Image: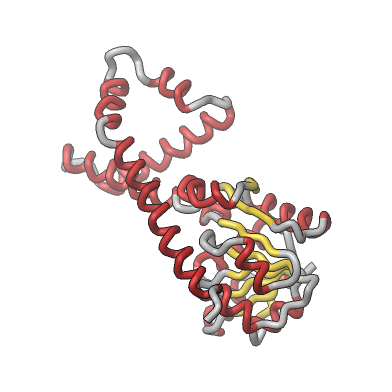
Length: 272
């Protein structure tokens, strides 16, 4: 089975790397297209994928096509293409609905929200599918996602919220850890920022593994670390003064951004 990828931005390149590293497909089964061919050729130097001359060629050669363009470019692109009815089209844009995709393709459609951590074969890929998928198409799709991540099916209503917990989270966590490291250096200038960062990364890895391997809840781990009247307990009180409000604002911003994007996409689908 050939897998097509249209658009080689960060998501498209990550999918190529993840599929190849996981051995979910052989590199020769990947057919890619990017408007700037040089980017595809640079990727081909690391992974011997096939480079198509056009997005249409990808659709002709692949059974599953991941469309990794910008959200506002997805529907106009799909309208320009002649896509075989048996091709499974997968969008990576949360703001483009299944109904939107079904208006421009008569066959099976899905959307997936990947995560950059799939490049190391970890993390969560969110997905939702149309009712048009055959059992065989669904199994092939889940096999691909499960090879590079934990594949988690969610509703279209949920996907906008949980995207923050999966796709956006690596960047947000990195931002929080950077603030943590910078605060430590401000407090103790003799401490190098490089050492502070490396200690936080190792601690984050250890924390994640402990939670996973011992199947602990966050509250259970807190109980292990936060002794009565100790620094961790007091530190949690400090964080509780600001973090909840900050995360509420984060989700409110997300809802607003998704709403604005969906309005622009709906303008693309409205009769002129």
